Length: 227
Image 1 (cartoon, rainbow, N blue to C red):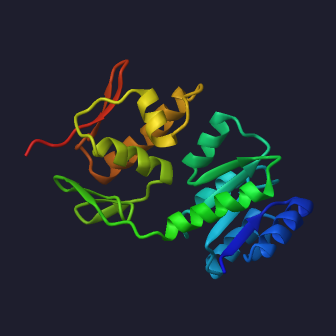
Image 2 (image 1 turned 120 degrees about the horizontal axis):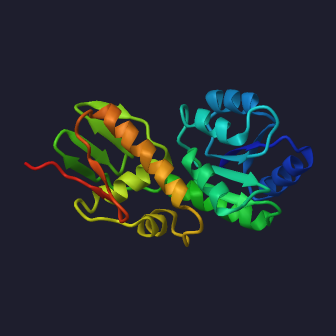
């Protein structure tokens, strides 16, 4: 039985989601605000979290960032705003999936189950090494001389994608399609913002190394140090 935390300030949506998921065999916990969600996630072991974006007070994106400090279980966003930029903001905050309202309860459960199964699926650990920098694709960790840095799901996927192909220049479209796996649609700014965060975190973790290079009007590439 999977344990799922529902976070939404709308009691009708909460009740509908809870009833459907319970019929599918899930154990459901509920919170109607970010503070209660963080408290529950800190004290109870969850297999996934369904999180509304548009909550009063602390919004879902901020709650997601806080959740990522204490748990790596799948987080599925629900929102009335399902444009490309909104979905990307959810992924950049650390979410794993994004479903626009109104939605099918059947689709919600299918996405939820798929994310949970992927989360628990054994992934052989591959460690990409570039000098003192280690990118562990199994543990999804970035290490440098024994120190680690926290990367969101999207940031790690971008870094890993580039590091698997050192020296190769990838356009914004290639990165968008390779990582987000959807057609680029006014997403250039989001790529730039996310890559800026990746570079900032790498610079803090391994100052002076400059592993990621911007190629003017072409995109980005990962620069492996010369041995």
